[in-house]
Image (cartoon, rainbow, N blue to C red; front, top):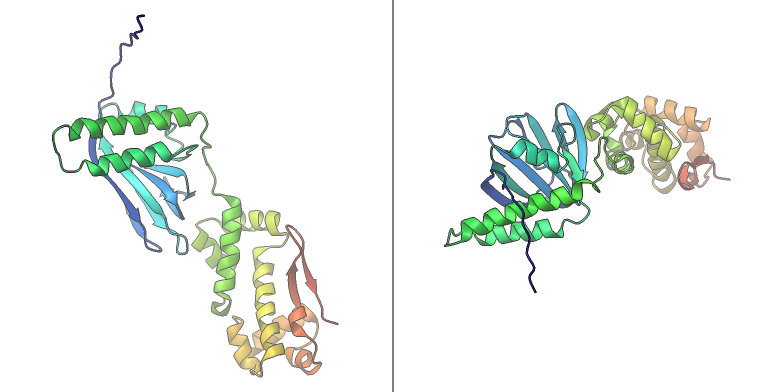
Length: 292
């Protein structure tokens, strides 16, 4: 029984330069700058932000991002869940066509991978042949072609992300507010830390939480102050600082606007002040409640 295949195949001109993997430290960053060769980072776990052509994108687990040769880029790992990413670095005459066939079409630089396991295996194989022993060069070249084959097969299934993951941004915003209540964090600072505009932040926060970021910050400050008023003997001045206010006057004014009475009166009433504030009743259902 005869079985054969005829396939007149021209392999792409591809020059391997480097491969590696790294567990990034929090806020690990590169750039802004230009690379002398093309690089693809494959994210195995964690979260970070990638900037290219003055556009920010959040990149997370099972996604990859292309750093094109000669283009100004910047990337930074998250401070809480930094990347574990692997990469390949390469050059070649046929690279533009090869990248486009994988989904990197000049507008999309971040791809979601349906199954990244073959890519992890290929990079691992490349790293085990760094000794330049006989045959290592061909093995590395074969694994590079295998990686690009996986990307081509994935390209019709990959979700090309044009916008950051909104749900992640909202959760990160909540975390930043909770972590920096005492610092008096503002909506402007929140947007800057998340690499998005205030308009975008306000829109997605309202859609997900049912309140504006500004209102959420106020609620968080009041909730913190409520707990301290109810459970400690701290002075109003001390509480105002911990709740993120510059002066006792600004805190008292905000408290009265929020609850209708000054903080000293609320404390004197000996109510369970921890019931003043906000309760998460589920998505789009944030309500303010008053202790009885």
